[in-house]
Amino acid sequence: QVHLVESGGGVVQPGGSLRLSCAASGFTFRDFGMHWVRHVPGKGLEWVASIRHDGSHKNYADSVKGRFTISRDNFKSTLYLQMNSLGGEDTAVFYCAKEIGTGPTNFFYYYMDVWGKGTTVTVSS
Amino acid sequence: QSALTQEASVSGTVGQMVTLSCTGNSNNIGSYGVGWYQQISHGVPKTVMFGNSLPSGIPDRFSGSQSGTTASLTISGLQPEDEADYYCSTWDYSLTAWVFGGGTKLTVL
Image 1 (tube, helix red, strand yellow):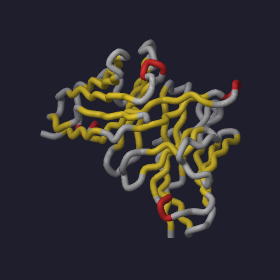
Image 2 (cartoon, chains in turn cyan, purple; image 1 turned 30 degrees about the vertical axis):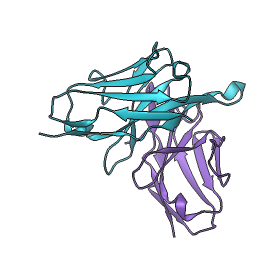
Image 3 (cartoon, helix red, strand yellow; image 1 turned 90 degrees about the vertical axis):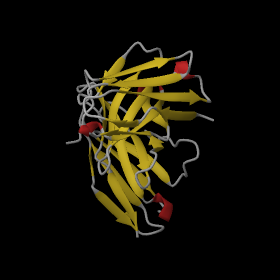
């Protein structure tokens, strides 16, 4: 059974840094792209960053570009999110999500598939 | 403002059929499949549809469709446990980013 467990959240002062981890099990981690998505209290889901299965390509939301770095260790089956220069707007529950590709040949697309339980990041002085 | 537009709220009675919509443009929904994600009481998101395929364990009263730049999630035979926030999401090649809709709050009366 696919299992994703986030860790590393906590309370941090504005301008501070945190590194989130997402430990994966139950599937061949190195074969799948991964995402970080956050939920701000009272607001909706916001995609943060994604990384290809082999780490060769990364994408970021404009709101975090230049401050956050997504990475992965396929030997440890772990996804990371290094977050620097944190501000109040980054206060959220951060989820990692596994990607799945599915569909017939001309309509093969990618989706977020399985989600972890999340880790809470609070930026406050 | 979200790249994908969803109704803020939809309601229905038990047993009724409801349809949630997600409107984008040719850079996103018009070019890629749409995923639908359920979040109950701001808890852990759960994938309830990718494209028009049901993930394992999701009841077949959920169905999905896409036409042009609009995607829809239909729930037939609405159940109390379906009350949740529902988000649509897809890739946007112009923004080079994944985008989410603002979410629809589904209330089961």
